[in-house]
Amino acid sequence: MGQFNAKTLLKKSVAPFFAGLYQGLGQIVVLHRVIAESKNQRLRNTGIEITEEHLEQLIIFFRKRNYDFISLEELVDYLAVKRKRKFVIFTLDDGYLDNLTNAYPVFKKYKVPFTIYITTNFPDKKAVLWWYLLEDLLLKEQSISFRFQNKSYAFKLQTYSEKEVAFNYLRELIKSQEEENQLALIDSLFSINGIPLYQKVEELALNWDQIIQLNNDPLVSIGAHTVSHPSFKAISDDQILKEINESIQILESKLDATIKHFAYPYGSAVEVGEREVKLLSKTKIKTATTGRVGNVMREHINHLHALPRLYIGSATTELELNNFISGKTSFIKGVKERIITV
Ligand SMILES: [Zn+2]
Image 1 (tube, protein in one colour):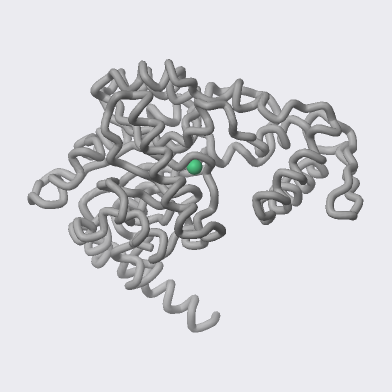
Image 2 (cartoon, protein in one colour; image 1 turned 135 degrees about the vertical axis):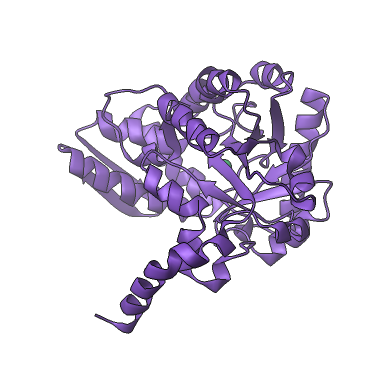
């Protein structure tokens, strides 16, 4: 056994005593889609989906532990004033239709406030949800071939594992392209197979009337999530400011409301750092959340533009959740993991 493993083991044994330092005051949960249970064969997009039952169990999990369910609006107050109870805030990214049809009834049943961060190209139906187009294409076809940048690609798709391998490969290939090349690649992949590029955004994204309907309920707040969901690391300062400010303007004019909350697209350490947080602080946004994983500490009152969240997907177990909210997960990771910013 290496030294690292021995150290980790030792840490695990003392974790129950020290984890308290890492548990903080509460959590901001990040979800994307809330879907109905289905037996259909799926590829890896299930990572951004949980079922309605899973959402209900999640709410019950926090309720059993006497958490306060609060909105982002109440966060500053919760950080500033000492309280006995911990808090949880629910957020959903991007603007999927199932947030209204599947998640909203569950939140409503338990009177749980939540925020949806809208990428405005979703309701404007200008986003290409290539990860869902790709899943459909690969599940349907027995083989595909296409040309991109003078290279030929061919995939055999007879078995599930062949489809899965192709999905993971193509997902990385698309993700790693700069915008212009990405569009060209998406075009050569889908157009040649007769798949309309905007089919999925029509099918899966909220429209403006639905967002207005949600925003009219005091339980719901709408936040910004850029216009086109770019990786900030790949674009200039001016482009970043434009993406943030334009999305705020569009939302404010459609909703006749003030937009104060923002989530960075993707939001991992690869896409958000000091530069992006500094730029964000030049805008009117009050709180901004990342995709970095961590508990919210009192100290975050000084880092309201770099708030960590708790990522929950279909595979998250109750034990993982327990370890996370107790601070055990962060403690085992190390000292730097106490106050997560960027
Ligand atoms: Zn997003």
